Amino acid sequence: MSPTQVVVIVIVVAVVAALVAFAVVANRRRALRQRFGPEYDRAVEEQDSRGAAERELRERERRHAELELTPLSPESRARYAAAWEDLQVRFVDSPAETVGDADELVGRLIAERGYPTGDFSDQIAHLSVEHARTLTHYRDAHEIRQRNERGEAGTEDLRQALVHYRALFADLLGEDPVAQRAPEQRHPDSEHDATSR
Image (tube, rainbow, N blue to C red; front, side, top):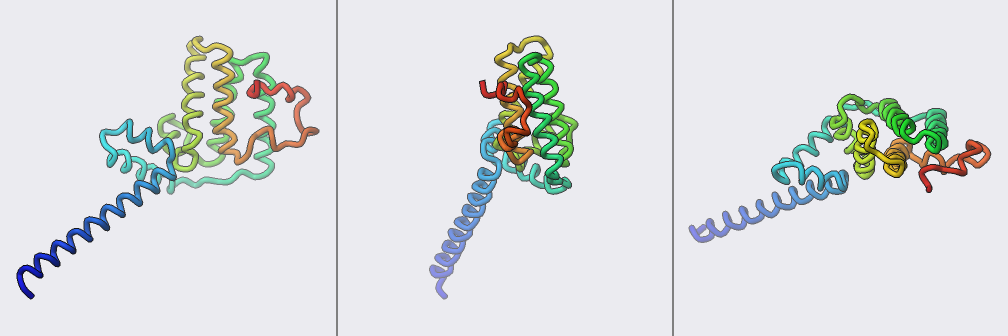
Protein backbone atom coordinates (compact mmCIF):
# COMPACT_ATOMS: atom_id res chain seq x y z
CA MET A 1 0.00 0.00 0.00
CA SER A 2 1.27 3.38 -0.90
CA PRO A 3 1.52 6.22 1.65
CA THR A 4 -1.21 8.06 -0.25
CA GLN A 5 -3.59 5.12 0.10
CA VAL A 6 -2.87 4.89 3.83
CA VAL A 7 -3.60 8.61 4.26
CA VAL A 8 -6.86 8.27 2.30
CA ILE A 9 -7.94 5.26 4.39
CA VAL A 10 -7.13 7.11 7.64
CA ILE A 11 -9.12 10.14 6.47
CA VAL A 12 -12.09 7.97 5.44
CA VAL A 13 -12.04 6.13 8.79
CA ALA A 14 -11.86 9.46 10.67
CA VAL A 15 -14.78 10.89 8.69
CA VAL A 16 -16.88 7.74 9.26
CA ALA A 17 -16.06 7.81 12.99
CA ALA A 18 -17.04 11.48 13.20
CA LEU A 19 -20.32 10.78 11.40
CA VAL A 20 -21.10 7.87 13.73
CA ALA A 21 -20.31 10.01 16.79
CA PHE A 22 -22.49 12.81 15.45
CA ALA A 23 -25.36 10.36 14.81
CA VAL A 24 -25.08 8.93 18.33
CA VAL A 25 -25.19 12.40 19.90
CA ALA A 26 -28.10 13.42 17.67
CA ASN A 27 -30.06 10.26 18.60
CA ARG A 28 -29.45 10.82 22.33
CA ARG A 29 -30.53 14.45 21.99
CA ARG A 30 -33.67 13.45 20.08
CA ALA A 31 -34.53 10.81 22.71
CA LEU A 32 -34.10 13.34 25.52
CA ARG A 33 -36.24 15.91 23.68
CA GLN A 34 -38.99 13.34 23.15
CA ARG A 35 -38.93 12.15 26.74
CA PHE A 36 -38.68 15.54 28.44
CA GLY A 37 -40.53 17.76 25.97
CA PRO A 38 -40.67 21.35 27.27
CA GLU A 39 -38.52 20.36 30.24
CA TYR A 40 -35.63 19.78 27.82
CA ASP A 41 -35.79 23.39 26.64
CA ARG A 42 -36.09 24.64 30.20
CA ALA A 43 -33.00 22.66 31.26
CA VAL A 44 -31.02 24.05 28.31
CA GLU A 45 -32.01 27.61 29.33
CA GLU A 46 -31.02 27.02 32.96
CA GLN A 47 -27.65 25.34 32.32
CA ASP A 48 -24.43 26.80 30.96
CA SER A 49 -24.49 24.59 27.87
CA ARG A 50 -26.63 22.06 26.02
CA GLY A 51 -24.22 19.32 27.08
CA ALA A 52 -24.60 20.25 30.76
CA ALA A 53 -28.39 20.27 30.39
CA GLU A 54 -28.36 16.85 28.75
CA ARG A 55 -26.11 15.45 31.49
CA GLU A 56 -28.58 16.81 34.06
CA LEU A 57 -31.51 15.17 32.27
CA ARG A 58 -29.68 11.84 32.02
CA GLU A 59 -28.93 12.12 35.75
CA ARG A 60 -32.65 12.65 36.38
CA GLU A 61 -33.36 9.48 34.40
CA ARG A 62 -30.81 7.58 36.49
CA ARG A 63 -32.29 8.79 39.80
CA HIS A 64 -35.81 8.11 38.53
CA ALA A 65 -34.85 4.51 37.70
CA GLU A 66 -33.99 4.00 41.38
CA LEU A 67 -37.52 4.89 42.51
CA GLU A 68 -40.05 2.20 43.33
CA LEU A 69 -43.11 3.67 41.62
CA THR A 70 -46.43 1.98 42.17
CA PRO A 71 -49.60 2.20 40.10
CA LEU A 72 -52.78 3.23 41.87
CA SER A 73 -55.43 0.66 42.64
CA PRO A 74 -58.89 1.32 41.18
CA GLU A 75 -60.14 2.06 44.70
CA SER A 76 -57.37 4.55 45.34
CA ARG A 77 -57.96 6.20 41.95
CA ALA A 78 -61.68 6.55 42.75
CA ARG A 79 -60.87 7.97 46.20
CA TYR A 80 -58.57 10.61 44.69
CA ALA A 81 -61.11 11.50 42.00
CA ALA A 82 -63.79 11.99 44.66
CA ALA A 83 -61.43 14.11 46.78
CA TRP A 84 -60.63 16.29 43.75
CA GLU A 85 -64.30 16.78 42.98
CA ASP A 86 -64.91 17.85 46.58
CA LEU A 87 -62.08 20.39 46.24
CA GLN A 88 -63.67 21.90 43.17
CA VAL A 89 -67.01 22.25 44.91
CA ARG A 90 -65.41 23.92 47.96
CA PHE A 91 -63.50 26.36 45.76
CA VAL A 92 -66.59 28.53 45.28
CA ASP A 93 -66.87 29.26 49.02
CA SER A 94 -63.21 29.31 50.02
CA PRO A 95 -60.79 29.62 47.08
CA ALA A 96 -57.69 30.52 49.11
CA GLU A 97 -58.01 27.54 51.44
CA THR A 98 -58.92 25.20 48.59
CA VAL A 99 -55.71 25.96 46.69
CA GLY A 100 -53.70 24.94 49.76
CA ASP A 101 -55.80 21.78 50.03
CA ALA A 102 -55.19 21.06 46.33
CA ASP A 103 -51.44 21.33 46.89
CA GLU A 104 -51.70 18.87 49.80
CA LEU A 105 -53.85 16.45 47.78
CA VAL A 106 -51.41 16.53 44.86
CA GLY A 107 -48.58 15.95 47.35
CA ARG A 108 -50.36 12.90 48.79
CA LEU A 109 -50.91 11.50 45.29
CA ILE A 110 -47.25 12.10 44.41
CA ALA A 111 -46.18 10.27 47.58
CA GLU A 112 -48.57 7.35 47.03
CA ARG A 113 -47.20 6.87 43.52
CA GLY A 114 -43.71 6.57 45.08
CA TYR A 115 -42.12 9.93 44.25
CA PRO A 116 -40.15 11.86 46.88
CA THR A 117 -42.10 14.75 48.39
CA GLY A 118 -39.41 16.77 50.18
CA ASP A 119 -37.67 19.59 48.35
CA PHE A 120 -39.78 21.07 45.52
CA SER A 121 -36.89 21.18 43.01
CA ASP A 122 -36.03 17.51 43.72
CA GLN A 123 -39.68 16.63 43.34
CA ILE A 124 -39.81 18.43 39.98
CA ALA A 125 -36.66 16.62 38.82
CA HIS A 126 -38.12 13.20 39.64
CA LEU A 127 -41.51 13.99 38.13
CA SER A 128 -39.94 15.39 34.96
CA VAL A 129 -38.93 11.96 33.69
CA GLU A 130 -42.51 10.72 33.23
CA HIS A 131 -44.64 13.85 33.68
CA ALA A 132 -42.62 16.58 31.97
CA ARG A 133 -45.54 17.81 29.89
CA THR A 134 -47.51 18.86 32.98
CA LEU A 135 -44.67 20.29 35.07
CA THR A 136 -45.18 23.84 33.84
CA HIS A 137 -48.66 23.62 35.30
CA TYR A 138 -47.28 22.36 38.60
CA ARG A 139 -44.66 25.11 38.76
CA ASP A 140 -47.29 27.76 38.00
CA ALA A 141 -49.68 26.36 40.62
CA HIS A 142 -46.86 26.27 43.19
CA GLU A 143 -45.94 29.89 42.44
CA ILE A 144 -49.57 31.03 42.78
CA ARG A 145 -49.93 29.10 46.05
CA GLN A 146 -46.86 30.91 47.41
CA ARG A 147 -48.30 34.28 46.32
CA ASN A 148 -51.57 33.29 48.00
CA GLU A 149 -49.72 32.62 51.26
CA ARG A 150 -48.37 36.17 51.05
CA GLY A 151 -51.87 37.52 50.34
CA GLU A 152 -50.94 38.53 46.79
CA ALA A 153 -53.21 36.24 44.73
CA GLY A 154 -56.68 37.18 43.56
CA THR A 155 -59.60 34.84 42.98
CA GLU A 156 -58.83 34.47 39.27
CA ASP A 157 -55.22 33.56 40.15
CA LEU A 158 -56.51 30.96 42.59
CA ARG A 159 -58.88 29.51 39.99
CA GLN A 160 -55.96 29.27 37.59
CA ALA A 161 -53.87 27.53 40.27
CA LEU A 162 -56.60 24.91 40.65
CA VAL A 163 -56.61 24.39 36.86
CA HIS A 164 -52.81 23.96 36.95
CA TYR A 165 -52.94 21.50 39.85
CA ARG A 166 -55.63 19.54 38.04
CA ALA A 167 -53.37 19.06 35.00
CA LEU A 168 -50.64 17.31 37.02
CA PHE A 169 -53.22 15.54 39.18
CA ALA A 170 -54.91 14.06 36.09
CA ASP A 171 -51.54 13.06 34.66
CA LEU A 172 -50.55 11.26 37.87
CA LEU A 173 -54.01 9.74 38.25
CA GLY A 174 -54.01 8.54 34.64
CA GLU A 175 -57.39 10.11 33.89
CA ASP A 176 -59.35 13.30 34.38
CA PRO A 177 -60.40 13.22 38.04
CA VAL A 178 -64.01 14.24 37.33
CA ALA A 179 -64.85 13.42 33.72
CA GLN A 180 -64.51 9.64 34.13
CA ARG A 181 -67.09 9.33 36.90
CA ALA A 182 -70.69 8.53 36.05
CA PRO A 183 -73.17 11.41 36.59
CA GLU A 184 -74.91 9.58 39.46
CA GLN A 185 -71.55 9.28 41.30
CA ARG A 186 -70.86 13.00 41.18
CA HIS A 187 -71.47 15.41 43.98
CA PRO A 188 -74.82 17.26 43.49
CA ASP A 189 -73.01 20.58 43.17
CA SER A 190 -70.42 19.29 40.68
CA GLU A 191 -72.34 20.89 37.83
CA HIS A 192 -70.71 24.09 39.11
CA ASP A 193 -67.18 22.89 38.39
CA ALA A 194 -64.96 25.76 39.52
CA THR A 195 -62.23 24.97 37.04
CA SER A 196 -64.48 25.07 33.98
CA ARG A 197 -65.67 28.63 34.49
